Image 1 (cartoon, helix red, strand yellow):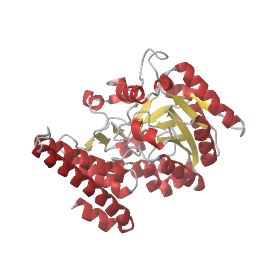
Image 2 (image 1 turned 45 degrees about the vertical axis):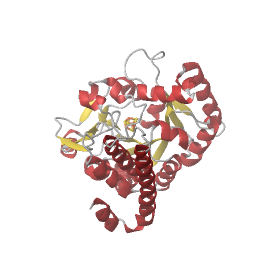
Image 3 (image 1 turned 60 degrees about the vertical axis):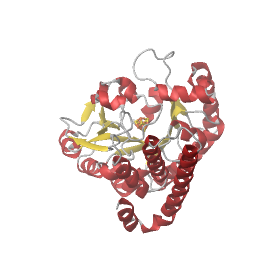
Image 4 (image 1 turned 90 degrees about the horizontal axis):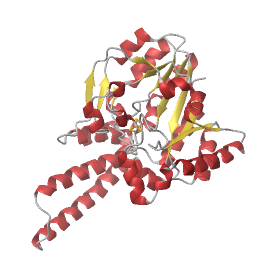
Length: 366
Ligand code: SF4
C-alpha cells in the first residue's frame, strides 16, 4: 500500500524505485536459498532468524531509498515503523521552543537554540548528543535508542511565534538535524519557517546534512529576505566508503555537494561544515568544499576524551568502527591538528579560512 501510494505520488522516481526493489528481491532470493540449503545440509540457520533477515532487508531497502529520493524517505519512515520496536515518529508538546545558549554555541555568538524534535533519525555513529545523557531535554530512551525514532514538538510554530524577538541569533539545532529523514513525514519545518517570516530574528542558522532541505527552498528564499539566514551544511569526508561506515543513513557525499550548489545558486548563504572530520583525503575534501560553496570552511575534528575530559564526546560506536578499520589516528589530537593544518593551507591558497570550534561557528552568528 505504501509502495503504491508513493509511486502514484512520485511517478518520475518510479524507474529508480523499481530498480531498487528488483535488487532487493534478488538479495532476498539469495538469502532464502542459502538459508534452506544451509538447513538441509545441517547448517545452523534456524527459522527464528528469518524474521531478523526480513527486518534487515527492509531496513536495507529503506536505507537505499532513503539516500536517493523523497519517496525513499517516506518509505523508510513508514516501512521501518511497521517493524516492532522501530516506530519512527512520535509527537509531544513542548513548554518552550527557544533555549538560551550556553557553552560552545554561546561562545560562537548565538543567543538561542531551536530544537524542533528530540532524537535524530540520521543516527550517526559518532553523534555526541546521546553522550550528553539527559541534558537538552533528552530522555534516557533517546540516548539508549539513538537514531531509532524521533519525537516531534508539534506546537513548535505556535511557541516560536510567541518567543521570537528581533535581536535573537538562533542556531537550529545543536541536538537534532532539522532535516532528518523523519522530517519528510513530519513536515514540521515549513510552519517554523513561516513563523520566522512573520517575526524575523536577527540571525537564523540551519545546521543540517539533509538533502530534504531543498523541499523548502522557496520558503528559505523568503526567510533570507527578512533575516540573516545561513545554512551550515555538514560534509564529513570526501570518501563515500567512509560515509557508509560512520553515517550510513546520511546521503552520499556527491549528493550533499550538489545540495550546497543548489542552495548557493538560490543565493542562500551556505557554508560547508567539515564536522566531525572523518577519515578523508584532506586536500581533496577541502578543494571540493571550497569549489561548491566559495566560502570559508567551518569544522571540528572528532571529539576525544583525552582532549575533552568532560561533556559531550564521540559515541563508542564510531570509535569501534575506527579501531576495526585502522582509522584510530583520526581520534588523536596531534594527528587531527596536522589534518586541520593541511585543510587550512588549501583554504588560504584561495584567500579563505578554515576555522574550527567556536571560532568557526562564529561565522554563522555574525
Ligand atoms: S545528523 Fe547530527 S544530530 Fe543527527 S545523528 Fe547525525 S550528528 Fe547527531
